[in-house]
Length: 79
Image 1 (tube, rainbow, N blue to C red):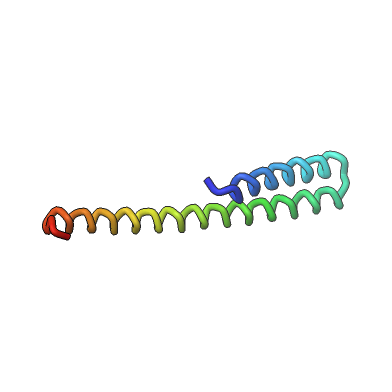
Image 2: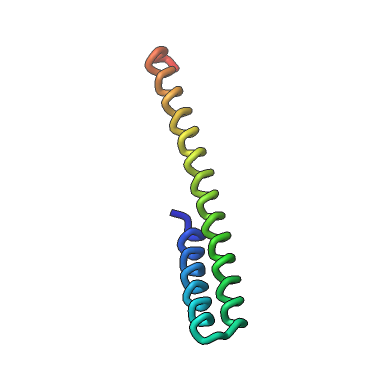
């Protein structure tokens, strides 16, 4: 799991708490700040997911390439 996913989730939760406190206290400034932190956290989390997906694709391609190389070696032991 990418660190951006973890940090993004933490930021999202902090923003939710701050927004909720703002709602309870009637403080619109705190509500807005909390909502902004939530958005920032969601974006960071999404970025982390995209990076994880990219790594997964690269790993699958690398594994497929290694499998193909191993099959070629079995066919031609001199290689």
